[in-house]
Amino acid sequence: MDFPVISLITFFPLIGALVVLFMPNLDNKSAALLWKTGFAFSVAEFVLSLPVLIAFDSGTAGMQFVEHLPWIESLGISYYLGIDGISLWLVILTTFFVPLCILCSFTYIQKRIKEYIISFLVLETAMLGTLVSLDLILFFVFWELMLIPMFLLIGVWGGKRRIYSAVKFFLFTAVGSIFMLVAIIALYFYNLETTGTGTFNLLELYKLQIPGSMQLWLCSAFFLSFAIKVPMFPLHTWLPDAHVEAPTAGSVVLAGILLKMGAYGFIRFAMPLFPYATHQFVPIIAGLGAVAIVYAALVSWVQPDMKKLVAFSSVSHMGYVMLGLFALNIQGIEGGIYQMLNHGLSTGALFLLVGMIYERRHTRLMEDFGGLARVMPVFATFLMIATLASVAIPGTNGFVGEFLILLGAFKSYPFWAVIGTSGALFGVIYMLWMYQRVMFGPVDSSKNSGLSDLTPREIAIMVPVAVLIIVMGFFPGLFLRKMDASVNRYVQMFETRYALHLEQAEPISPVAAHLAGKGHE
Image 1: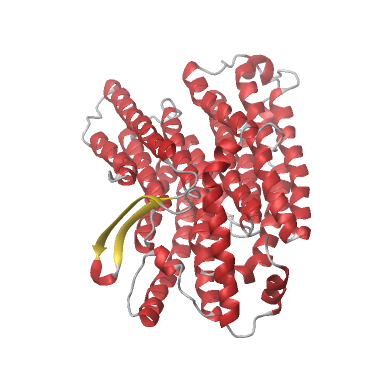
Image 2: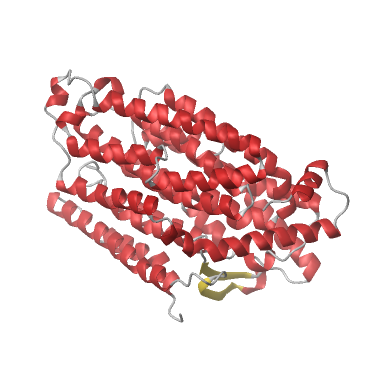
């Protein structure tokens, strides 16, 4: 395809941001026009992304719709974009969720509406750019750009502790990015020294045979940056604060999309660039992933605030993603990618529903509710669907992802897979406990008995999410087929490069020797 479709998808939201920027913002009529314009551009963006999904060749393992132009030739920096089966569904997830985020904000956001919409549209461009960049500098530019609008969404439109949470989010992420930038520059100079040509082209850098000791240092820098974004235990402490203080749409986009950038960074950059170091870190990452699953589930169990409960559940669910990716086999990696999509839908739905009830009661404490299933049956239905998906009940999307992850994990590290499996039990307990306390029992408060059920606008937000939860649960092949070829090629390339490193390298550590002997199917 000669038409620069990826560039169009990536930068179209910026066009919408510019249009909104020059619109008036004087009265209620102007505010309504701002909302309609922002929503129209976000829906148009989703429609523009669908031809990529339709035209994507499931049998092609490499990058598709590639755009490669020189940018700063003297430094080997290029404008290099592409999509494969690993990034395709994350791109679609991004364009799918942003219209819902804007639509759910219509009544919640009452101040600085223009700036709010602009922040969301700029954030969408940054997220899409991060997912499609194949040049390390271009990737870093988009990676850092994500910080600014998300910082504003938390700091300007958040709750009482919004400034503290926004600064904490920014500092955690920025510190990790500094180390990653240093590692990117080191990669450039190593490539320049060994090949005589400096480049930031990711696919070219994949071919480098980097010494094991250097891989460990550079991989650690990348790992730190991505681990903070996931976030992995024990670097997760910024997430509950950011979720709780962010506006509803901010929490949705943070859980639904932004956390996936960390996991995507692992699979696209850190792991294939440093296969030897990745193998060295497998026991550590698998252990931290399993611990995160159980620890965050137990912390969720004792939360009195529904939003904080869902926030900690994100840490637990992303632990499953890391467990799958570092199984280093097809089932684990496909399960990890699928779980990224699942977590985006189920946790995004939970945050949307918590926001809807908060708008009515201005409280998120479970003790303030009870018996809402009688008063708000439509709300109760959607909350049940999201709850069942979150606890991975068969027939929902969550079951498919967790099953594949645990299947892959049992092949590679059975002990940590058993620990991770036990976390599923805790997930059932805290989610159903939350549902029981909020939905069932007597309606004790007059404030609850007079609550209105979901409006047509709110139903329109929840229906597509609920439908996808069911479709992904019953027809996972529709989604997995798009990633099969790319993941197969990815695993083969990773193991080939790792084996080549072992042939050429100095004696390896006991951990690497064990992994080399055991292998990862």
